Image 1 (cartoon, rainbow, N blue to C red):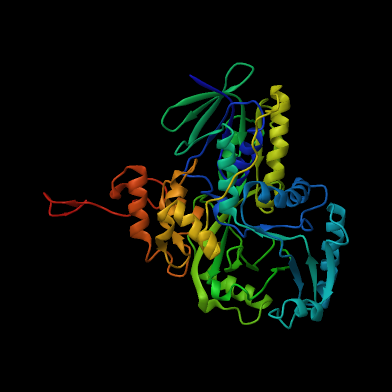
Image 2: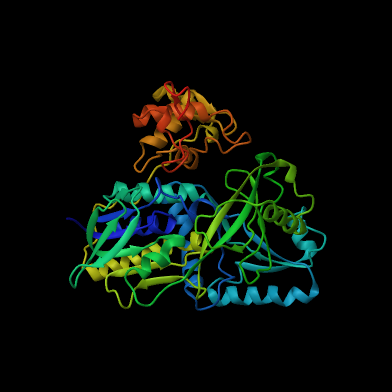
Length: 487
């Protein structure tokens, strides 16, 4: 039976952050993911906010890893070459009765480790002077200057690529079905295809399925509640409606509906918060999207909802205790949890990765690698280049002169590079997340056929096997001549 030092279950942003940090140690690491690619669960559908750290309860793991992750994110963006912008955030107050809640958030932020220079309470007029589109109802606002925005796809892919660069292995379409103890020092992990892999240490970063993975080995059960949130994404034409991320005062189900620019120039509104039973329920509803419009419209005047180009749903992994569950499992030595990673999970991921990698390396008695390379270069994005840069790139590779996605100015060269990366795109969604082909106004209406052709060529598979994401989502079907129909 194959043996590894560490198996990480889940290739979302948290699992990939742990993998990247473990790659700095002399350990043989395997990442198992049940989907066809990294960033296929919660990490692909969220608000993309690097939270400042004023919201989480003081003393909680959420507060600790939020602050640490926020401070680490900008450094990590430089090392791994992904999009990041410190744009700041407002939390709006709409009545004098709520003013005390704004002060409470300010005080909590200071207790959590922010400084007076990071936070400021503004009057309604002061807030509107900075953000003219804000509602006239705004009485005051908390201004969090260290809040930022990021691309969650680029972040997760960058972490995974850097882990692979340093020797980590990723296996996709590998769903874990059982974990058993192997003597006193290790586990056997069984996959859906009955493949079995042994490891000294197992890390549970399985998102909305983290309770199921944890409960395979522990008598102290976890309970994850999938919490669904619907979003509306608007065209880049209205991306400048606000410059900062605009929150409302948080409620019992989360931070509420926000309005924010994205690092790629769009405008985003959402999410709602609805507890659901099905951990794969990512269907939007008319009711939820109407709620997004109503709530966002309270924060920002004349929200440009006529410019919506798509809607989507994300699932958050809310653990019953209300906090992250991070660290060793008390009754299963060698098993480590990174569970209940809901907001501010994206922000916290770099810090969670650093912490758990250190704990596992210490338990394993591992040595730090002297040849670890913590850098990664992004796929060239032609749309962001100067004419001179673009011409130089085309001289190296003529594929970068062929525009495939007109909305986002994505070239054939970028698409081919996204597939050739390790781990690379194996589906239409995989290409979209890496280079934004299909992310624009027409939502892949124009570029789909050519992207499918390139995937077919690069992967060496027939067009009929090209999938939107996981197997079973093929885009084409074949005619059955003997039956005179379609199969």
